[in-house]
Amino acid sequence: MVMILGASMVLWILFAASQAFKLDISPQDKMIAQIGDSLSLTCNTTGCESPSFSWRTQIDSPLHGRTKIEGSKSVLIMDAVSSENEHSYLCTATCGSQKLEREIQVNVYSFPKDPEVQLSGPLEVGKPVMVKCLVPDVYPSDSLEVELFKGDHLLTTQMFLEAMEKKSLVTKSLEVTFTPGTDDIGKAFVCRARLHIDSVTKERETVEKLQVYISPKNTVISVYPSRRLQEGDAVMMTCSSEGLPAPEIFWSKKLDSGNLQLLSGNATLTLIAMRMEDSGIYVCEGVNLIGRDKAELELVVQDGRIKSQINNGHHLTVYLMFAKSSTFYFICYLSLYHVL
Image 1: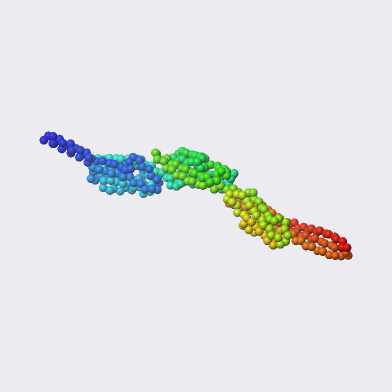
Image 2: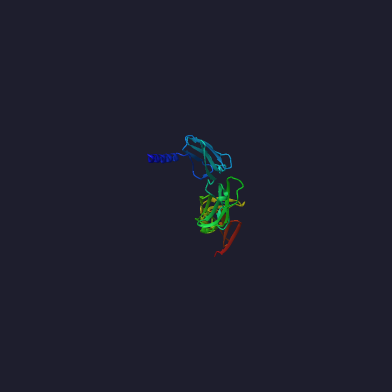
């Protein structure tokens, strides 16, 4: 009989222990939340039918949240986390004369966007530009690491270790001077940012393909059949220019006023049934996004007239050559033949 009572007592003690007042908090110990997100902290009790709850911070700051009790648990809800929620929170549960507390540390961060690659100007071969890797709206900025690569080659890196004056979102940037070459065509800038929060590292990166430019150069005009023509002739002029992207070609004629009259946007300019008024300086210009280069060619159109006369037994032939170009000139050939 004594043995039966002893066994019953042990079972009762174990049952009572299993129903003892307990308090758990979740997440446990530590929580990392992004600014703007929602966050819930939950205190849950067992072993008490009607517990009472309270929440506070270690330094008795405002909670910046709302509480909700659901039976044996209490939930602290932060609808939009801010830097003001970065605290150690204490949950206190009371059951009769018993009081239990649990603590959880909330750390917040802001890292909402991928880094931005910004250039001070177009990437023209041989000309230096400032390349900036910009990380917007970051917190805490003293935990930020930024790297800038060209392809697999590290150009520069920086750890932003300076202490923050206040809890606020800031924009950090990393800059380097870069001079592009033709071997950089097809490569890319990689801006990689890491935010170290306790033992957790958040990472974002942006890949920006290099758009390398070469200003137009070596603009050349070829002409067929000749720069010097007779009235009624036709002429074909072809222009080429080097650059990246490939330059567009524009043909113009220089007017007496010095202004340019646009003629064509094709590489080849063909003129037919030439007249003396078509004489002049023709300009070919290669143009792309970052520059232009030009070449000039002068065409001369001639008007040839022949006059012949027999007088006193002599044959007189006069060759009159009129030509109009950038300067007007006149040529006369005189031939005398004696008529027998």
